[in-house]
Amino acid sequence: MSELSDKDLKQFEQRFLARRDELRRIIHDELLATQREEFVELAGQVHDSGDESIAELLIGIDLAGRQRELEEMQDVEAALERITAGSFGECMDCGDDINRSRLDAYPTAKRCLRCQTRYETTQRGGRDATPSL
Ligand SMILES: [Zn+2]
Image (cartoon, rainbow, N blue to C red; front, top):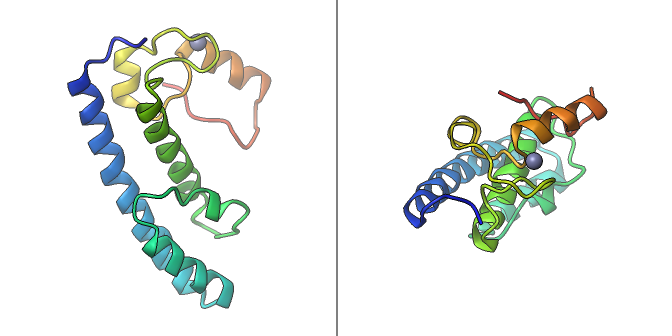
């Protein structure tokens, strides 16, 4: 169990929801801007998805220049799922609490700093590399 209070979790959740809406808007507009039929259709789904996760819809989508937003969207949705599941703030590798200051600076962190460092050492240059503090 993480040390975060319900109030903390609510604040993180609000932050993620706001960011998710922002990212959806960016991705939606970008999909429309491609004027490619299948992407324009996808933009409609992004727009209509309400509270549903859209990260899955977007897997494998090649939006040049928006890869960062797509990846962030997946991170934000995964973080929201962890809040729902009650595992937010715990390291996915060792199960320890993620340091609070690390979470404040980097709220979608999935690992404690120690595990993240080890992960990056083994995955250096990999697509999943997430910035450490
Ligand atoms: Zn860890």
